[in-house]
Length: 295
Image 1 (cartoon, rainbow, N blue to C red):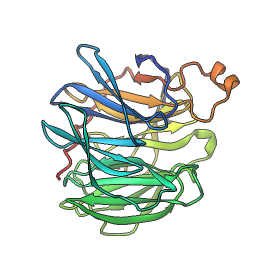
Image 2: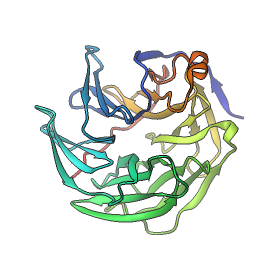
Image 3: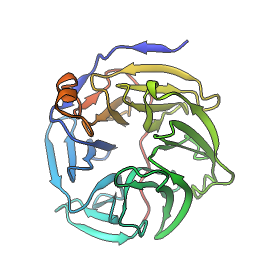
Image 4: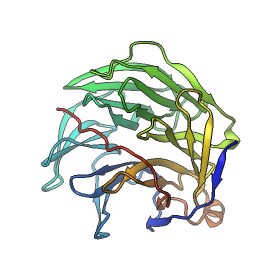
């Protein structure tokens, strides 16, 4: 039986974003980061002070990861960039996919310091996307024929990766070499659900190996058993298009969830006034801090 909870959290950022996505947290600075992909914005929120900042981007950014005290990396439709923290300046590192018809989407850093990053068609064209492994300047194509790659995350021991194709609404797992983050076998289906339950969107893996998956269209974050694929919990949020969770706070015991109003007309937005806002889930979690990307 699935445990269900109503929303008991709060709005962390009240502005509505067309496509709030790609949240992450930097424990060194106590700062949460996320994107408005289609609005070409990078948002940051210092949790303790509540200080919020937004940086306009020269590209469609979707994933940010720590490198060190001076820099971060940002994945975008124009490739992987180094972001200098001091002045927000960007320096291109490499091209992920040489296809101007596509953009980057979901991604996450593996314990080895390698980045998994997904791409998709700018209009979500059927099977136009792929998932890549980026490590120390080398780009390796891992999985193709994906329409909307999402839910990229890794088990605590680094031996398993998870990902979804939101359009097909399937959640997959694949065995990895923990030292490199490269697959050692073929993907297998972990869970499959109807669209009425919401699309499998962004995800994180907690300290116990359970998957916390945002459900696009259902206004919820679901918790899955990583072995059986059984849904254990559903936590509702007050916006239908929930897009991605992230563990935040000094102990990684809180959860931030982004959302979006992408594709909504005026009538739909009137019925869903919180669409695009950024939330704190409002329940204690046992999360993990994400590793830094190794240049």
